[in-house]
Amino acid sequence: MAVKKKVLIVDDEPNSVISLEFLMKREDFEVFVATDGEAALRQIAEHDPDLILLDIMLPKKNGFEVCQELRADPAHAATKVIMLTAKGRDTEVAKGLALGADAYMTKPFSTRDLVARVKNLLGLAA
Image (tube, rainbow, N blue to C red; front, side, top):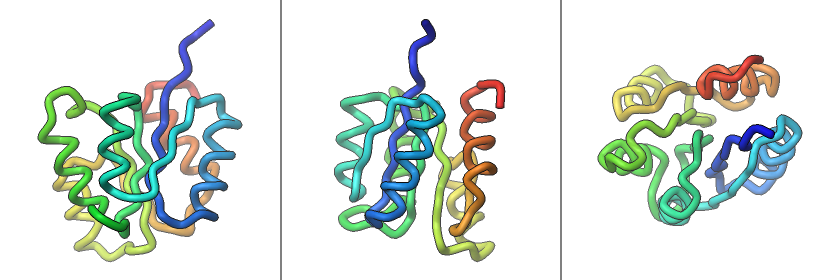
C-alpha cells in the first residue's frame, strides 16, 4: 500500500479548516492542521508535510513569513506550498510566488481546482 501524502492546512478560519480537512481526507491524504504561523512551523518540523495549504492572514506569523522561513530551511525547502487567500491582488500573488510558493489560489476557489492543483504538485494522477 502506498504511503499517504501528508498535507498541512494552515488557516485561522474554522470553516475553512473544516472544509479543507474534509476535502483532503476524502482524497486520502494524511492531514495536519495549524491555526497560526508559529504553530505551522512547529507542525512542519514535527510532521514534514509533502504539501502545505497556507493562508496569508494568520495570527503570530503571516503566511508570507511562514513561506520565507520554510524556504530558508534546507530540510523543508522543497516542500510544496499553495497559498490560499482572500487577497488576490497582483502584488500579493507576486509576493507569494517570489517568496517561494508553488501556487496561489484566491478564496473562494473551486474544490475541484484545488484538488487538481494539489495532486499535480505532488505528482499524483488527478
